[in-house]
Length: 323
Image (cartoon, rainbow, N blue to C red; front, side, top):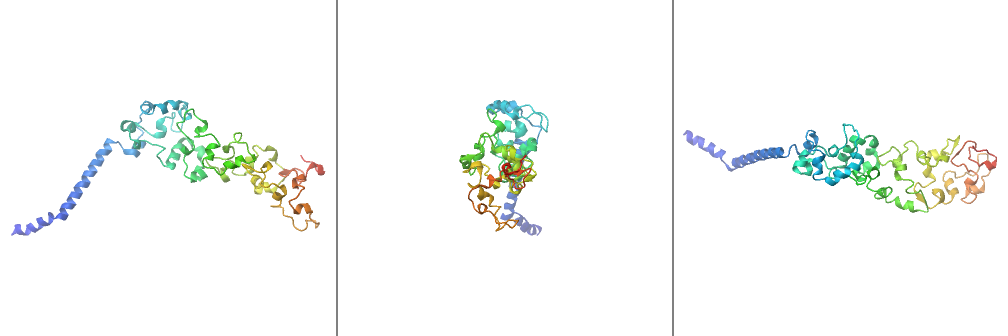
């Protein structure tokens, strides 16, 4: 009788559903064991291999497969003996991480490869040494566009080009900023080659608009070269402080002399100085001010950027003595 009562229980344990569940459990256990064995075959996997600083390969091991790169690295700024935050000099493993597992296995996944890594990871790696020059990079147009360091720089460059750039300026910049390139072919333009893009713009990010190197005042970028208009003046043209040089001048190139935004100077002045019917003194406004015709405003208001004597920037010939 006991055998008969137990028999149904045995039958339930050996049902098809139970056998399927048992087989699935065994399969998962086997998969776990095989994964553990595979982890031992490839120590630590990709992430652990980078973090394990006790498994360096050394330059000799790198040269077995990357002889050309190792040879050219001697002329590379990174290859020169220089102390870095972690101490010692820069080697292959300073950027790619410990390479013993990679050297033994050959798998790219066992080492940090910037060409396969996300832009943020590449930037973080470079900032381990170059943090000071890239403090504002994440807030720059390049950072927001997810452009990494190797977008402009080639680390293993032969002949060590200046700043390890992939191409000379401005051709490198024109690869993305194609809208600016035609401006340097205008009849009047800044001298390309004599002036580089990075003389005015900080490619790694600046607090000024358009990554200009002067965060406080755009005027200061221009006056590095255009010193005579820098002042300081007792009487400064308000437009210079309010809008900057680009209110009246094209920064890269244009069709008019002195890179003026309009061919007629009076048209530029009348954007702000649109005359009322009468002057402050109650006298009629001269007719020539009310049109864009000659004479030019700056024929009288010659010191247009600022003056130490005249608050309306009149020229010395009119009885004013300019400093």
